Length: 352
Ligand code: SF4
Image (cartoon, rainbow, N blue to C red):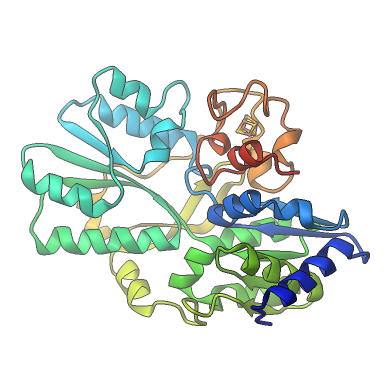
């Protein structure tokens, strides 16, 4: 199904609004999809018989508390410069976040890409740079590219604290533990790198449809309609054909596997999932800033329901803190911090 005209999109909207079949529960597993669905008010366009829940698509949100605390402890050494994407600075570990320790004098730097850090590390060879490397398959490929550059340029003052995740194992966990998910809007960015091949075994195993969609409201509407129409079928629909193929970006996959290998990983809300992460290969361990044994998964606020929001068990407005004690100005959990976080997007756009 590939529909482009306004008239055809209107037809699908009407179909989704007037749907009167069996109750259907769909999950999006991409933070950018979560943001766009909220921004476009797509949940409000659907029949009450179709519910849309968010899954573990926000990399900052699924990162465990102990990882933040490890970054904070590394920042105690003032010869270290902790480098991170912006969202991670605001996520609180057991008691503090990176923004707090920066105020106290730690060296914490925000960048937009690991390549920005490489330039700084070349200019300041006496400083140690530690990159907070979180993310899914897409970002892992970018870290692999950065390591390639670091090795080729013979740079010796950069390490990575990794908490890298892979999507299929988390989706499989949801299928096993969250009875009632009838289909998945597959993550768009991840699919560009991995190809849609990674969803085929899960679709077959659980007889569930997947739709790979881009980030426009129209593509998301088409994706949701295809999931409703294919309920109960192991069907993969690729609507994002301009950039997603079955096999994905094989060069990026090869570069990732040159430096990283699969490992078990801890996820906020899920606990440890077998072979759901990537770690530096033994021969590249010199780039590791101490990423093993990061498993503690506690929120600093015991009433926080982020774990249940991330697994699709609760919607944000079912958390007792949502909207009163926890807002984008006063975040109590990771899902309210990131622009891709489910709670943040529900709050900003009043998603139902
Ligand atoms: Fe966590 Fe806040 Fe969301 Fe509750 S509202 S689940 S505390 S982020």
